[in-house]
Length: 486
Image (cartoon, rainbow, N blue to C red; front, side, top):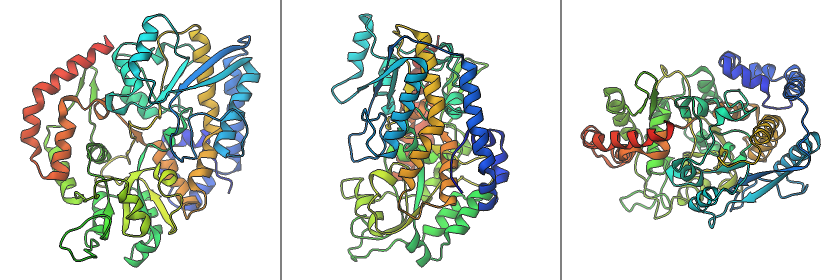
């Protein structure tokens, strides 16, 4: 089967049909057959035609993007020419098609470490444009997009002509979680290729899994039927830790683990979100963003997570968990992000497969794939624009075309050369990409509450009393944050 994540699949996911179609690999293949591909081509043509003909008379559309600084095969911009790299070439061809159809020039400006958010704010205060679009990280409130947002320098995406962030080709969960008072200031989508590497996931070493009696196909079946849970993961890993060098302690370089994971606040945050906990929610009745983590249900989930996951001695560097452990066949599972398929595991000799993060239990409605706010996967439009109509139009067209023209290339790079390159793993990635999650608390960590979650899960500190002591600061932070939406 020729694999393609089509708009047809996106619609199936949105309507819930996917959950019925994924009862087996055969069902997935049938759902993604040639008829879906044909419908997709027609849908793309019809939608672009519905936007109308435009001639922007050679105007320049500028994307200011944070790009890869490492040995990554995925970039937020192409190199300016065809170079044989599938992602680069897909982006280049997309841009050329848009340029020719709408008589516009697309250019890129790299936002590097020397480009700080405050300098961009100062330029806009002086009335200067910094570009039509920004693709960057949120970085837990410290990134360039976050700084522009904090200074009221971003346009409300819901007011931008032609832009439709509520449509299925944009991130629906971002739209739902980041919209307050009919205002949405940043989102995510296929126009930012880094959005493919930001979601959390679970990796499994195939050979080691077999040695421990774990069948990857049975695990795929659990995912399909909704029974892949935290307790199932724990049952596969709880007895596997082994002090190989007999020094009386466990560390990721010298010993063996059932599962390896980082123990920072980002990891404890993704674990809590994975369990279906809303880290923050907008209350339409009160008009306030609320954080409701002081409930018995949350207390129980934090307590259970503290039993399931442990603090692992990384010997001073989190990269050791992968470079000197999972990659070297010293753990069955690893918890991280999709980016590791490219940045950390490309040269791993042993075969591995990928799964979504498990549910807390089988009653949870859906899997949740927390997206790393430190990844440059977010899209915003600066307030200062020379032609907001052109900005909205070209942004919408680029995002729409990226789903069909760039995503297949991402799959090719992400899955290339490993046991990942099978229909089940492609379905796992479809599921991961369709269940991405982020909310404002995950990025801004109001009141320090998520740091308290981290201390509870990985370091045995009581959460209930810590939460109570932080509520005053939490509420003050929320009130200040809501000033951005008045």
